[in-house]
Length: 207
Ligand SMILES: [Zn+2]
Ligand SMILES: [Zn+2]
Image 1: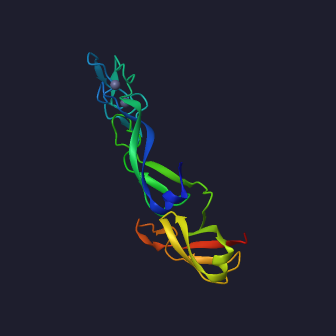
Image 2: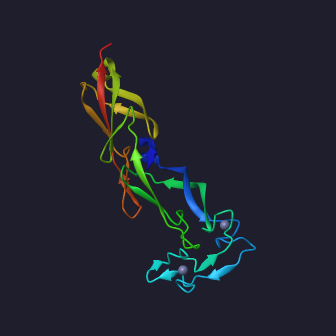
Image 3: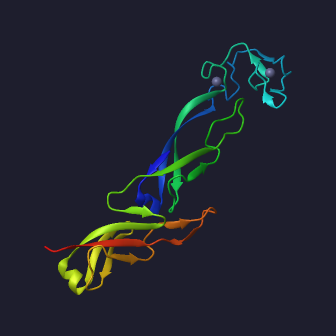
């Protein structure tokens, strides 16, 4: 589970995550043996490492039995390591979506291929903006004068400070739509198909 801000969901970012995985032991290069160890072929699977479809229980898939296991990995051939990896969080991602990190997972027993790691996204609430589908909603205070005569206000958005046009005669609770400042529409293919809108509810301050 990865917490991201609403801004990250709008703009995307490169994040660094820490993963704890079993990787090939650097002392024995995955063999699981001490350099001076005698290695015997596993009598149970005759060195094949498999028992039907499954890994052989006696040798756990190595096909060999080890008299002196490697002290670095106690014969497993793997050690647990904490690593940092860079992850691209794409713009338009939302809660419940998963990012697949290919071959960043566990090394299989006996040096088998590494599995994939999935990162599930969780959006954190924002104190100014709220997500509604691909649209962003917020409330902003405007002066009574702007509300009466109309004008332009500066609004700090996830795309930077934007000039927002307010038409004259606006009342509290009225919503101004700004096209294209919402969340990118992220397709399953990974492509972005336009963006949602920013909906600004005005709050007229009499004084
Ligand atoms: Zn075996
Ligand atoms: Zn080892």
